[in-house]
Length: 437
Ligand SMILES: *Cc1c(COP(=O)(O)O)cnc(C)c1O
Image (cartoon, rainbow, N blue to C red; front, side, top):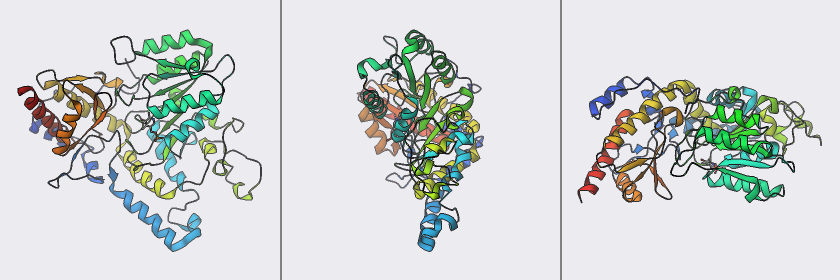
């Protein structure tokens, strides 16, 4: 499987040694970004080995400073902060637009930061799931994140359809974990004119599989369906080119790879051909209204002809401030450079885990770097939760998802090759002790 813009990096001749990991760190042009983050500490006061950036990213050091600036301006200025704050609140979200566009490969008019992920998913389905009696199905991947399943199920019911009929789940072949692109494309061909919307998580939260978005999007469009993406595990992880790929809409959260804190504001992308169409049905709020006439407070909604036209409320400034601190780091590092490091870093983790004798692991995530981001998911022979507890007691964080999947994620913005080496060493010690019994 090939994803056009997520090329396989040059093969690295890995070595399982601390000196090799240190050498990789010394050659890493992004190594200084680590010091821009606050790490939780272990029992000895050392930085934990933080392999859960797929779940909640670390705090950028500037987040506190940026939020405090807004607290100060609020204290100093009260309502006048809307105009006179150092970063005036009225247009504050515009400070994030260009950085967001670069992050996901979109035009500035195609993106907006607003709400939270599931809210945005619903808002997008209001506009882009408008079923007819003959074209009403939504195609999703089996085992999608529960919130996405609930959202899709409730949208289908809202329109009076039966989820059992209207929701089509793509399943891997018997005995396989990963969905094959050719099977997805084949299913879309077969379903043809009955599909209204194809909605995928770009990176599956459980297996870590990254889909071949351009190929699947083209297949959805040729069957006459719209194509939407959930980038919860894609934004800040993979190289994205949403505009070029012709994706109709996408949504993502701000607290996983984007490090904007628990419950952070989310992102939304709407292809320009839709975003510039004020006639497109939507659920409206005053912040989506034409800016020049918003404060005339007229009764008729007049949509901003960009993705901003889907905004509902005036946004939480402290949350925007936290996200701004993080997006600035992504903008300085750049996604191509992060992705290049990420391929090497996750490749190193995979290499080290595979070197542990005893075939203790089954790695579920595809081996092909083009078919994954930085997360590696694996099952273990023994009880996965026990391994997790051991790692935690040694100051290493990764996570566990039912039924028996461990996810370990070296986020390239703040994880080093030495961290990966130390992490894998702890796993190796545990496996040695377990298999010696
Ligand atoms: C994390 C995640 C969510 C979480 O939704 P919120 O609205 O941010 O709580 C939803 N979908 C996917 C695929 C996720 O990975």
